[in-house]
Image (tube, helix red, strand yellow):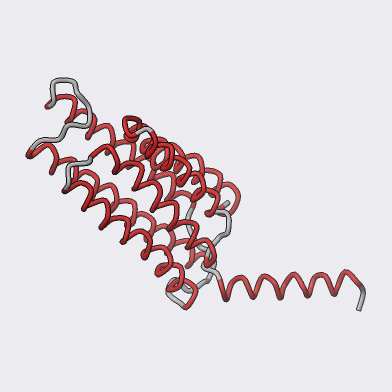
Length: 202
């Protein structure tokens, strides 16, 4: 066998190992749509808070607070639902299993930091420290992406690093948390999702 044949065999073995240990059917388009949902949700929350708090942002009272929480929950739900639908379609197109050992490991490593962060954010909100929640959401979401990247497309860890950095900046400047949340969950998702779509999905 020639050197080219050996290199080809090694490349095929490497691809098989990646497919067996990593879930690589994540959809870039789902990231774009998640970013759009986040921007729409942020616009609704901004309007609610500004309209109901005499122009002072980050002051939540009664039904305004719970409406904002509902909008946030809907953004998360729609993002997850879109991700599941588009990723399932991509996996079927590539003749790959949607639910196997690699996808289970991916989900577990993604959910542990995310759920812990979500519970901690609820505690912070219950204490009335609204200015810190934007930074905390970004940090824990970034940690979840970095943790999950070991079992998926490794490039998602770079988005995770960006989210963590934005979260730390938001924690240092609590008044900027809302806008950095928009940057992290909205704009960065659209940019990164578009890049992933053109790199892996086309």
